[in-house]
Image 1 (cartoon, rainbow, N blue to C red):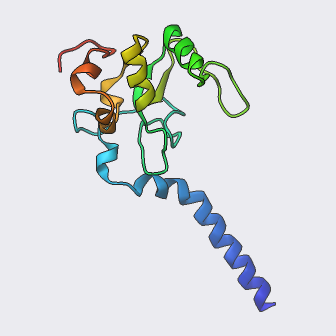
Image 2 (image 1 turned 45 degrees about the horizontal axis):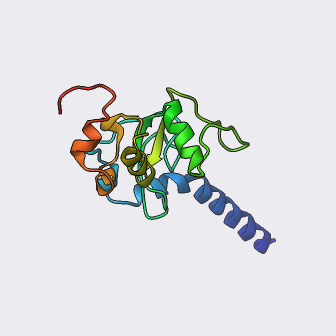
Length: 151
């Protein structure tokens, strides 16, 4: 009887750990990855986006794609990224598919590639992670600002 109780207690502890693990994973990295390109707190991009699917373009060591650019996608970009092998417009069982006007955390490398090729979408700068600066210079990101205000 005692072993059965220990086993049930272990299952309970593991269940609780599994439930809270995503919150732990999101806080394991330094505050620096939770800052925007202006070194302020990262703003919400849109619900359900980001590597951690928490609405923010947060990143960490487990985010191999470095999903750090909060972009408002357009048809030009969606067609471009599909031609490069990353179809963001077709819904799947685990992904809703994007349509023009949707916001999404893009990989830093793909945004920069699209920018150089002339297909970059507009960017919500306040929701774009500071790590995006490893791919695209600040002045170039400002050129794609959604709100066109001076920074």
